[in-house]
Length: 234
Image (cartoon, rainbow, N blue to C red):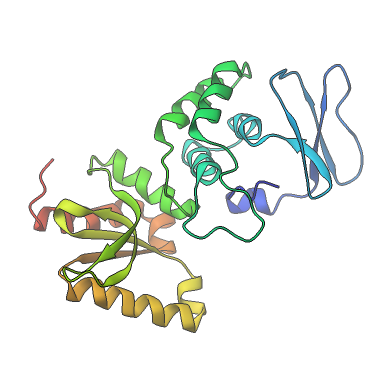
């Protein structure tokens, strides 16, 4: 209901997760994965005709099943204030303050994982891969980039939006998803945008899905190389 991006193994899992407050027993039925909640801080909201847990509580509960990076990506998604919101969709689903307050009151077994993830959540990431790339860069000791920034030429012409921008070094790190190549219109827009960056003395580094999820160290090394060429030093 919160459109939280999840890794493939979760999206392929069968069944609807249904929770009931303790002392009620977890639901048992075909196609249902039941949970019994003891968390007294849960708020119940109604969306699309269904009752479900509030965004901040949902995020806390995911701390027990998601990796650190995916939990951060979920948090980035919930707090995102989109540049262009979908019609009729109220965003953000939660604020960083709401997540922080909810973690403080949360007593679940995985509260420590939630606390750790909370420190890495940032405003601006528009996709799970963008968050995961940022976290790999941070762990490698690279400077923290600005996220989804509008880039302009010296004369004020809009060049495009950059996923991760290292302004002082004129380096841009971009996740190049499959949809960028399967959608010919989007692909042409991306090519023109990248050409505009290069023409205006920016260095764009594009990271494909296979490298990000198969060899992230190589992806980060390419970005680090561009930063070093521009004068950055640890």
